[in-house]
Image (cartoon, rainbow over all chains, first blue to last red; front, side, top):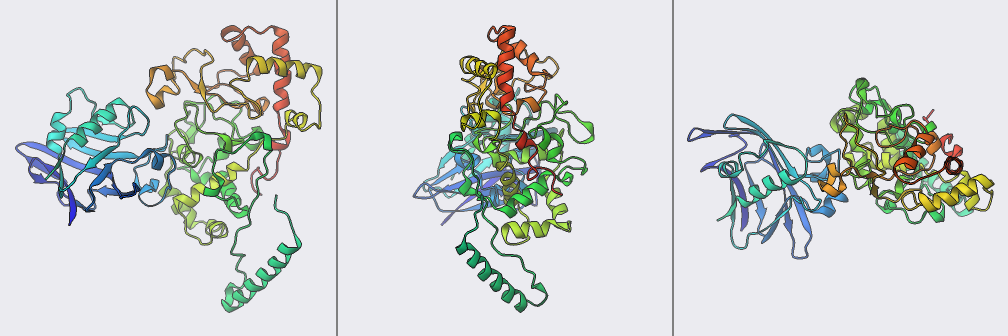
Length: 178
Length: 338
């Protein structure tokens, strides 16, 4: 048994082949959608994968009860710079060290947005543990996520801080387990 | 440094024979270089204390350093192949950029901060004036990507390195094969920067008992210890921390320093305490290069930090000159590779 993690726009699946969606006159277009997800082993080690919507429509994960969204601070500071942590992947901030946890760029209801959500410094840490227990489906309704953002939140967030933390927290709050 | 021993000599002869036998068996590849890069022993003074950088994560080799040095001096790292690391970090001025208050990038773009010297970086816990980078490995990519510095990117640089007529061989010598990766690129550039150790100023000679301070330098050191050393702590003359010396904010740059990293109000206008080693060579001073001379700096301290008479300023100045390390700035091993 494995977990499957995928992304919805209301009830429609957002996929590598279907990055532009129109549902009930609401429009979303995802140009970039990438995020780090880590699997926590029994011994507490974390194995990271980098999910990229343009390459895969859903994310198939081993059946483990604990996951994290984002990257722990040790891996951020003492990076291997290899594999999923190679800056070539486009998730590394170069002007400071650390990795973007969730990267979303596109258009929602006609407005451009660029969300590079991340940061490992307190109190603006973008890192979230997910206890999934017996649930095997993890979904995020991006429509509900966008709609729940306060209207005064910037549509362009590209550095760590309180705004990135707020949007990240809203994002992870929309992970639902079935 | 690497020391020759009888035992190693025998080993080398054996290795050479083995390589030759292997080379002959490989037909035209009989010139195959020694497979193992030569270990480079760093020998900093004990009084520097433990290095912050974990050398076991990136063991120094002669070949790794040679590759890092070639990269450091190569303008192909910048998007239009015009500037190298050395453009803003010249060996002749302790790897700082004199005369330019703010860093100077491609197409004559001007950055927001004064390029700091590169010396004794293995003992730094953070990098940049705001400490936004907490590891030397991470520092490598900052100027490479900054739009007002090299404005470049790794895929572009790697493509150029792969096409070059000499880099594949340098990577092979340093890492065993010609493949070029982010990890290897970083490791080599870091290796070269780690050997840039300045430990031969007059201050060091005095510390080693080989020289004596003049009466004026001695008075200056006493004043320095009382007024300056809590932040500019000997022997590295820094404290790996952030502080304010009451500089008013520059109204055009609005640089809030550490605040830009932590977003905490009490970090506003704090900047990393720079090392004072080689201060004579690293003008202008402060994060925005606003002071051209050491006397302007001392004047500022007198007016805004601690009262210092003209005589005291002269004595501190005399002591600061004992931190100049001419052998460091003229070390041929650190200069442009010829």
